Length: 254
Ligand SMILES: Nc1ncnc2c1ncn2[C@@H]1O[C@H](COP(=O)(O)OP(=O)(O)OP(=O)(O)O)[C@@H](O)[C@H]1O
Figure 1 (spheres, rainbow, N blue to C red):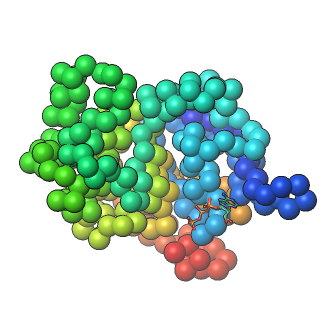
Figure 2: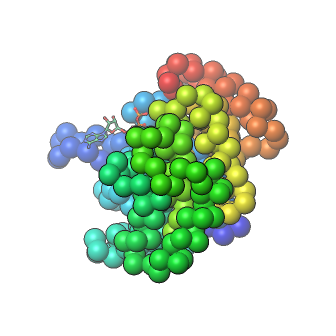
Figure 3: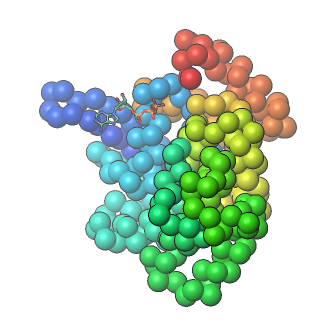
């Protein structure tokens, strides 16, 4: 399998000399093309810090990050933002849609910024709005949509550049259970049909059961991993059992 993303001794420290706090502690990680990887762990474990470094939002204190074998940490800020725009998609807990723009303009934004031809943009909007069940909402504005619909717009926007990886930080955190389930099914389908690599941070064992592999982070380190090897229901049960078997119990993860 092709490795899309690799880290070596990835480390993030906060604070200054004498008073440093290690949020991510020398993590070595390989993510393969077409993976749907979940990241779980107690509050403060370093999940978001790790995700922000992997997605190039934040720079590590030390270590390396390679995308398809190329180090990204030597890139200048401008080069890095072009790289980010072309290769990475984001889905955030609070959707991050622009309220003053229609749904179709929100979806088109990453391509419009890259000055892509309008016909190509329209074709992509057509395909993605069909995939995410958003066709009848394209002319509306974010305030006219439910949370679940808004998050599907955010997912469509994340996919519009055909990125090599989509990062999702607690994408179901603000959704009710029905909308969560719909979004997770979309993410899962997007992973299966387009072979999109997805890395998702979640506290929720149900959401995590839609992934194919879970890394458990504790105190800035990879504490354990579980691979999905049977049905989603079975995987869900194993996740719950694992959380229960860890010191502190399941509650520590919520
Ligand atoms: N900018 C910062 N300055 C100082 N400390 C920080 C900063 N950002 C995060 N931290 C600390 O680093 C640790 C890891 O934070 P992080 O947000 O990555 O955890 P998390 O696992 O995502 O937690 P949660 O599940 O609560 O979102 C925490 O102890 C946090 O207080």
